[in-house]
Image 1 (tube, helix red, strand yellow):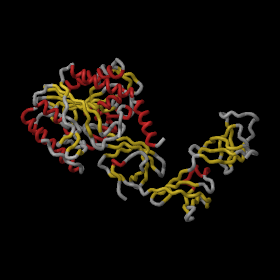
Image 2 (image 1 turned 180 degrees about the vertical axis):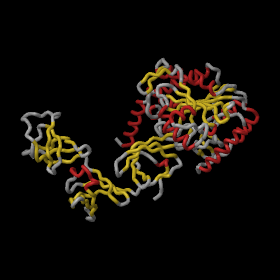
Image 3 (image 1 turned 135 degrees about the vertical axis):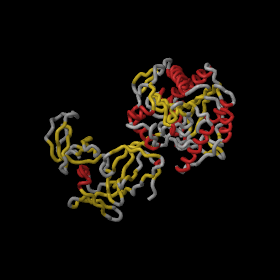
Amino acid sequence: MTPQIESLAGDSTRLAALRPALKMRSKALLGVRLFFQSRDFIEVETPTRLKFPALETHIDAEPSGEYYLRTSPELHMKRLLAAGYERIYQIGPCFRKGERGERHHPEYTMLEWYRIDSDYMDILKDTHGLVAELARRATGGTSRITIQGRNVDLAREWKVITVSEAFKTFAGWDPAENFDEDRFNRDLVEKVEPALPLHQPTILKDYPIEAGAFARSKPGAPHLAERWELYLGGLEIANAYSELIDPIEQESRFHKAAEARAVLGKPVYPIDAQFIECMKAGLPPCAGIALGLDRLLMVFAQAASLDEVMAFRE
Amino acid sequence: MADYSASDLRKGLKIELDGVPFEITEFQFVKPGKGMAMYKCRIRNMITGGTQDRTFREVEKIGKPDIYSRELVYTYKSGDNYVFSDPDTYEEVEIAEDAIGDRKWFLIEEMHVNILFYNGKPIDFDLPVFIEKEIIETEPGFRGDTANNVTKPATLDNGYEIQVPIFINQGDIVRVDTRTGKYADRVSSAGRK
């Protein structure tokens, strides 16, 4: 046997062993579509190749000729909201340059949904219902899954903790009072995330406005952003916002991200002027979320790495 | 020497921090949703063997140590030093007994070892996993007793004390696992060499 054929045989063996995980993935995708169909959402598709990837300090886009591969479908989906679509969702690939590890892959499957006249806590209700429903469909009929050796019912109450509480408890300071980006990121990864409950889905909410990305500020508390993140078994699964709809504030955040990227020596993407124009014309109050489907499948499959739930990895 | 970027880090890479060489023994890429990429590492001090955890941010530059390894031959002991030499050039390298520690018991003349150099100084070496040694002293065992779980003390030809199964006799050649310093198995019996 030539080495090439041997490795092909090895690849077939690996792929054959992934059958239960790939079946689970297929059931989950169907589950997403049934869930949103029954709630009157429209499934949409938006471009994968973009001229103007969303400008965020720490998210790098993969160049593709004169375009970039999308890091998120967010800006195009908001243009649909501005055009009058009330509830939309999308399942599709997103790309992030340089992100590779057991919990990261430069190409992965994102589920995003948006709804108008809603805020981030409405999105939390959707998410709770969806995640429990997907567990039922994908893992064998019940919303109970096993996380690190213990039975966890995803339909039961989720823990909700503010970023300030979590940091004060586990890192000894409040980033909402005196934001320090470096310290925030480091303590989040080293102190806060490892201390979150493993056996209860946990929502970390109300981020310092500086870490709010595209979230609007909290009414009556302008130093906080209406943003939350879902953790399952300690793994970050989804990121939700009451969306920022003020074009002036949005432009100012894009400029700040552009400056920060320049300081870090990263490429600075041009601002999506059409997106700003559509915000100026009027983006209705809305909320949305990005959920990493591969990561959710990792939790369902009790996998230690994305290798166990993706057919092909670089 | 040029530095590493944080994105170069991976398991097994050797780095330099504050003038000390470390090896990365565990490695995890982490990146909170909107935050910067970080690299969580467990690193082992290559001089003392101690380990610690260290998280590097994507913007950090990390020192690249001047480290290389060479295969040399252990030739002889000179005072408190063990002397290794290059079989081609006869160049000699000495390592102090203190730095060698318990592994001195497993060095055999003419043995090839990989020596690791940091800034031109030897800091570590790899022994073969198994070495063969003669038992020069042990109480006689009971005839027919081949149990493996009962042990007795024995002495190797260099004076090293080791626990061996009851059936091992004086003059037997045994294999020793240099990672644990423990008896592995019998190579040949006395008289049947």
